[in-house]
Image (cartoon, rainbow, N blue to C red):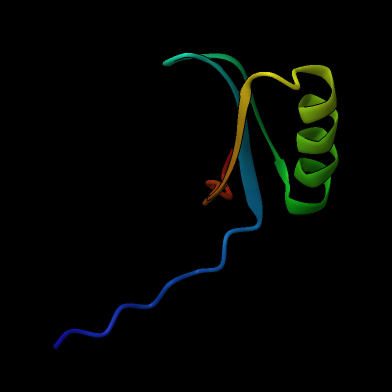
Length: 60
């Protein structure tokens, strides 16, 4: 069994989907992503909105 060291994600990627096509794609800190996700859910109530943790390169 191998042990993996995982770094907690500090950012989230929020996407709004029209069928299989993302029409909005935004990456932000976890707190900002929650606000963005809530806003997108209100704005696009009939579309699927996803939020996934991502690792961000520190050198960007």
